[in-house]
Amino acid sequence: MRKRTPVLDTDVVEGICSMNWRGLSKDSLIDAAWAYYFFSVQFRENLKIARRLFPEDSMLEELEAEECDTANLSPWRGVAGSGERLDHDEFMQRSLALTTLDERRVDRLQARGMKYLESIRTFDDRLRALSMASYEGGGLQRVFRAMLTAADWSDPALQAFRHFLIRHVELDGHHGFLVGHLNGHRETIPLWTEFERLLVDCVPDLAVKLRTTKANGEQGNTHEPPSLATRSETARPEQGLGTADVDCPITAAGTV
Image: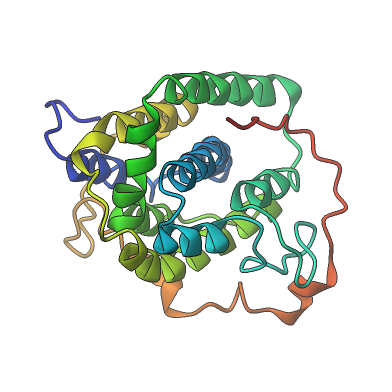
């Protein structure tokens, strides 16, 4: 965790990216995916607020079309059928349902996630709307790249989450253009800070100090996932064979 007060949103983003993503176990990475699900709920809420406050903004309208009720993550086995349209947080919710966790663990993650959403929902609507500038203006793309440096994705829920992250790295290059006219980077600091706290609370191993890799002289997290070089695991035709027919044990996080 950071030891100084952030003065820019990028300070918090850098702190998140510098976490111990490479050292996470499979179970810890699943918990991180759960934490991100709750972030994705507030992202959709913030985007809907932005659309309500700026109804004539055609760029935000286009962003909404690529984040909500869209088929740009489909298909994925057990999550979304070919051409199926759904909000991105719903894709995350269905993805998590692919892996069964014990009830106590689910309750812990649910409770912390709902506490996070309750905190986010106390913020001013204008601040939440302007968060799009920071989230889609490069912040989330950096975080996604850092997450993708994790080593073990050998789990159905994690495979779906990895697909989600890779597609968003691709999409967010264009999304940055769509929010370039907004100015909300400094205002978004408390929202990023809440996300940072959520991650550490759900995944304590993220706060473990990164060790220097003596073998190649690498230190810290370079945030550059080797998995982006090839998309073999997201391009398999058989992923389109399934549909979202899994019973989801995750309580929907609600909307504004």
